[in-house]
Image (cartoon, rainbow, N blue to C red):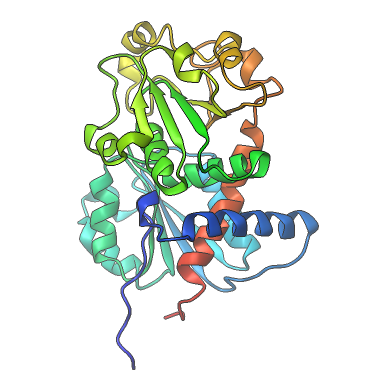
Length: 309
């Protein structure tokens, strides 16, 4: 028997190599066409995805589970509430065991170190379904949506308005992978991780004024002001972000054909005005659907070349 090859993991957008980012987006669009046309594409028949959730989920769970079914495989939902992980089983042991029973593992959790530790002890690919540091799967869907609407992202400008959170970090990494400019409008004290920002060089810059940041942008993006686990900070964050709502005034500074995105769930009247998220420039529903197609392309990339067992 030939020695087992180390698995490929997707813990960050930066794990994609060379021309893979755009190739994956184009493949996602083709898989979307097949699914909409009702054409069978059971490319991962009898393969199994284990899904570990430490955080609540709607889009992540449904998109991965539906994707595996459409590929002819299956997915198993696991949470710390009903597995031994919730009773103190070492993460390393769980990784060793689960990776002998499934073909890939998706983890949605708090600490980035959790997915990195699990990946280090796993015999199968591990996918970051969200951590407090990064949300790379969402960015695959966002980049697919942008490309579908406006073509190549290279040389264009995106504006992030809001917290320097996991989505902001992933947009910074996306700017590196897809070669676009990113302006980040956030209040002082809520900046993105300086190491992640610094690694992007001149592609990314912080612009405190959201109106200035949005000027001539091709894409405007935001997220909730208080992410999961930050609910106790809600009032303080509402005060800090009071001037950072994406409303009609902000969108008027962007290009006339600029898109608006939000990873959802959204709070109308807080980070985004209803007239924007429900308006003609919003592509949030396409963006949400594309979680399914982009993640199927990712699963195929990580799994299709591997022999089971």
